[in-house]
Image (cartoon, rainbow, N blue to C red; front, side, top):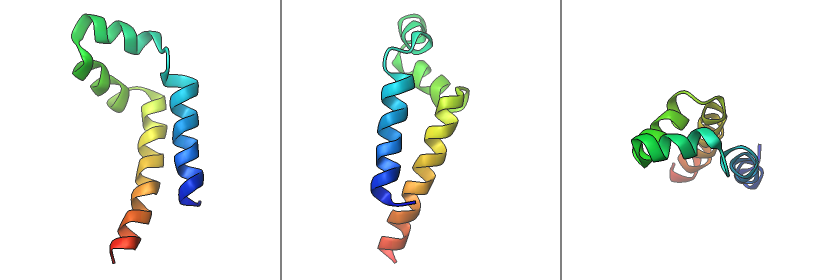
Length: 66
C-alpha cells in the first residue's frame, strides 16, 4: 500500500465515522476528552482500523529512517 493511499484511507475513516460520532460526543461531555479518546482507541472498532492504518504508515517511516 502506498503512503498517500494510507493517509487518504485514514482521512476517509475519520470523516465518515468519527466526525459527529454520538458516542464520542457523549463521552467527551460526560467524562472528558481524554476518556473519550481512550475509548475510541481501545474499544471502538473504527479505532482498531485506524490503529492498523497507523501501523502501516509507520512502516514507511521505519524504512525511511534506515
